[in-house]
Amino acid sequence: SLQQPEGDQLPRYVRVNTLKTTVEDAIDYFKREGFSYLGQAYRLDDLNLKGKSFVGDLHLSDLLVFSPKTDFHDHNLYKAGHIILQDKASCLPAYLLNPPTGSHVLDACAAPGNKTSHLAAIMKNKGRLFAFDLDAKRLSTMSTLLLRAGVTCQQLANQDFLKVDPDGPQYKDVEYILLDPSCSGSGMVCLRDEASPSQNEQHKRRLQALAAFQLHCLNHALRFPRLQRVVYSTCSIHTEENEQVVAACLLQNPGFRLVPLLLQWPERGLAPLTKCLRASTTKTLTHGFFVALLERHTAERLEEQ
Ligand code: SAM
Image 1 (cartoon, rainbow, N blue to C red):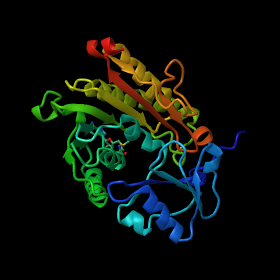
Image 2: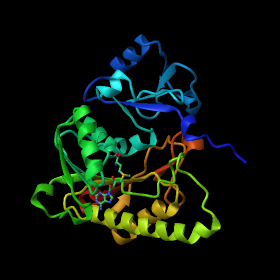
Image 3: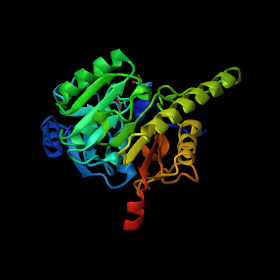
C-alpha cells in the first residue's frame, strides 16, 4: 500500500508573528543559531528538508519551513511570541479571509486561538476581533497565547456561537467571519485510525451529528447583516463535514457563492466544489484539511462585473 507520511514526518511549519517581528529578522535569528536558509521554496519538493536547513514557504509568505521533528517548543522566539507553531494548512483560513486593517471580524469557534492571532496579525491589530468559544478552559489557554502574541484588538467571550445574536448592535459592522468548528479531526495524522466494521454505524452517526452542527454554525454566520465573507474550515477528511456542509449551505442561502481559492494550490475540493481547497500529507505535506470561502453576492456587486 502507499506509504503515508506520519505526523512526525511532516515538515515543521513556523508562522512568523508579524505583530512582534518580521520574516527577515526571524530568518536572521535562525541563521545566527546555525540553521541554514536555502531561500524561497518554489516547488513542493523543496519542503522536504533535512537537518538544519530551512526555506520560505511557496504559498504563504509569513511561513518558514524546517525539517520534520525540529522542536521549537523551548525556543526563545516561541516563548516570546515571535513565532507560532502551526501547521501550514491551518494557516490557510485567516490568510484567505484576509480581513483589511480596521475591519470588524468574528472568530466563531476560536480556542486555542492560533487562527485568531493570525487574523490579528493580518489586521495589524487594528479594528475589532470578536472571538467565541464554548469551552472555558480552552478559552483561558487562548488568552495566554494571545497575550504572548501581542494581540490587542480582540474581545473574547465564553459563549455558544449559535446563541450570539447576529442583530446585536456590537456586531453591526462585522463583515468577515472565520468559522473553524469542532470536527472529527480525521485529518490529523496522529489521530487517524481505521474504523472497524462494528464501529461503522457509530462513526456514521457521529459524522452526521458533527455535520448538522457545522451546517447550523455556517447558516448562523450568514445571518450577520453586514457580512461579506465567511471562511469555513475543518481538519477533517470526510466529505460529510466538508463539501456536503458547504453544498447544503449554498442551497439554503442563494445570496452567497463560493470564491475560487489559490489556483496554484495542488489539491481541490471534491467535484463539483473545486473552488474549495483540500490538504493532505501526500499532496500538500500537511495534515488533512478543508477550506471554503463564501461571499455575499449583492445586486451592486453583480452590476460591478
Ligand atoms: N480555530 C481554533 C484555532 O485555530 O486555534 C481551533 C478551533 S477547534 C477546531 C473548535 C472549537 O470550537 C473548540 O475549541 C470548541 O470548544 C469550540 N466550540 C464547539 N462548539 C462551539 C459553539 N457552539 N460555540 C462556540 N465554540 C464552540
